[in-house]
Length: 140
Image (cartoon, rainbow, N blue to C red; front, top):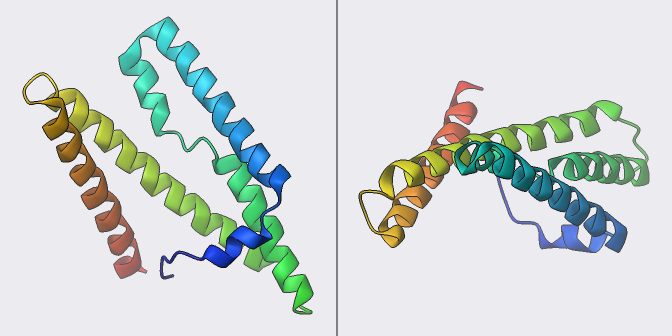
């Protein structure tokens, strides 16, 4: 699978689908805030690596894949499940990348400026995410 930006997908998305993503993201953010308030910012920060909109994204990917297949005269439930699995893989890699981002920020901020810490964490996130994605492609 090649990762690419597909702006035509925006025309397939309805307002209520975007609203559900915002709702899921908001709920995850509130829960993370409550966890941080109860257990401290270090523990709460770990929960920021959870892909907040993944549940709604997974259902939308499945729905849109089924619709495209149905409109093409095909009925392939497995294709929709595969599309969701690929989405889940990407969300997992992104979560691991965000965990590394948080770890680098946590370790670097007491020692370097916040701008440098942010740049280092961003580079670590990008390098890890791209490396893991490419490794997954290579091992396949």
